[in-house]
Amino acid sequence: MTQVVILAGGLGTRLREETAVRPKPMVEIGDRPILWHIMKIFDHYGHRSFVIPVGYKGHLIKEFFLGYRDRYADFTVELGSAALSRHSPSPEAWSVTVVETGTTTQTGGRLKRLEPFLQERFFVTYGDGVANVDLGALEAFHLAHGRLATVTAVHPSARFGAISLDGDRVTSFTEKSQADAGWINGGFFVFERRVLDYIRDDETSLEREPLERLVADDQLRAFRHEGFWEPMDTQRDLDHLNEQWASGQAPWRVWR
Image (cartoon, rainbow, N blue to C red; front, side, top):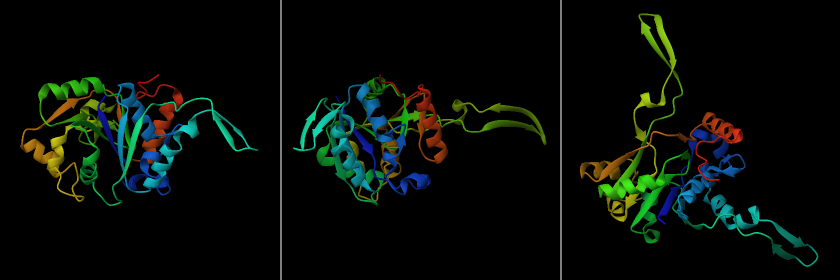
């Protein structure tokens, strides 16, 4: 079982309709926060030890896990005596460490603050995106290449129709293929502990200097994921994810 870090401290400014009152990872798909969906993906592959750095409205994430068992278990309460009997355990056997990392700390800084809690190898992903990445194949790929870091490369969502023009005449109009958009950082990293040495302080964005230096040192490899991946950046994204979940055919639901 490999540790999993889920970055959950950002402001989520592009989804202000929701994040004005709660942190982005607590925005719900169906009746569960997207954070829960991400954790279920890792759980499916046997990874059940989570470290979650929080910042903006982090108390709501803490409250979610502190009350998790009572929220989802069956119970009987005798109001006269205040006795409580639980009829079922927590539905997930997770170990969850929540770490306060400040409201303005950048992604790299949040990861650096977790150093006392981290093992020699761990996954890292963002708290606002879901995918059907084969995490077993991802970790095997990382171990095989022997470098310090692996990033999952994904195709961005195909959102717009592609138009071919001859002057002002439209010669074709087709739905743009997701594969046509090239590769981007999809999260779902695997890091060796030495990656933390590439992070300077709270002001360090993981996506800038640390990853750039890892590239320069030939210590970063990309695991190509051709399957489903979708972020939750806007209200449109959230609506689409909820539609997929409601259909019963959500591509990221790898668990049963």
